[in-house]
Structures are given as C-alpha cells and as structure tokens.
Length: 222
Image (cartoon, rainbow, N blue to C red):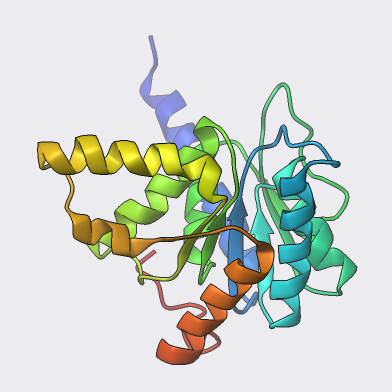
C-alpha cells in the first residue's frame, strides 16, 4: 500500500522533470518533433528519409526534437547534427533501450512518459510522423487530439508514408466517421506525404503563409 510520503516524493520528482526540461529547452527557438519506430534499421528507406528530413528542416532554421533513441529518432537527429542544426533528444528510462543516440547535442532524460510528451508538444511548431508502432501512434493521436480540442496551436501534423498509413486512415473513415465518433473535418488536422522534401515543404508552406515560427516558438497552452 502506498503512503502519503511516497506520493509526496513522486510529486517532487515530477516537478523536477518539468523544471529540468523547461530550463534546458527555454531558449530553443522553433523546432519540429519527429516521431517514428525505434526498430527501424539504418539501411531502411525510412531511416534514410528521416535523416534527410532532419537535415532539410534544419537548413530552414528549425531544431529537430526526437525521443533520443535509435531508429527513426536517431536518423532525424543525425540529419540535424550533420547539417549543423539543433539536434535535441527527450529520452525515457526504458530497460530495453539505450537512453540517447550519439547524434543528440542537447537532451534530457525522463522517468515519466507524460512529462516527456509535454516537452515534445511545448517546444514544437510542427510534428512529423514516420512509420512506427504503438508509441508512435500514441504520439500521433496526442498531437491530433490537442489540435482538435484547441489545447495547442494547430501546427502542421505530417504523416510520412502513404502506403504505411493508408490502412489506418481508411479504418478511421470507414469506422470512426460512420460511427459518428469523429468528423470528416478532423482529417484536415493532418497531411500525408511520401518524402522528406514533401514534409519540409508542407511545414514551410504553413509557416510562411500563416505565422512567423520565431514569434510563436513559445506560444502554446502548456
């Protein structure tokens, strides 16, 4: 049975994670969060695209934020690092995964998934989602939910890989829309592309048309 003392210490640990993250990332400027599978191999098409995207978006003045792990995360950090951009990692303590890949230049580790999510959402002005598993889906739907509910600025949410994501989108349209649990308008909250260049272009089109990313780099509801 838990006692009040244990709960109080947990609150302090949570507060400490937020304080450390906010302090570390307070002067980042505009960034893009990249999500995707930690299991993606370095010779994969998606690893190469994520690495390319990290470099392309860095050249546009955006930092790249990932979970700091291997696979897609490493690829995006690598692309940013290799082009001299800001390569950021928000790690999580897991028994089966190394904390940070070697291409992270600025990072923090988290014990709690929810504190980690806040860092992604607070400091990003776009979200790019490469193929991944349940963790990637969790991050994708978190971003969509906050945009749908108006709890975050409606920044671009870009899914990379039409073939990979089409089954999910078809199910959402055929089941969720038909059941009335979402509306067709919700599909306007994200875009699907097939390349790093297209993902970069969608983000830049949005920011050049609607906002100055530097001015809004700290204007979220978190």
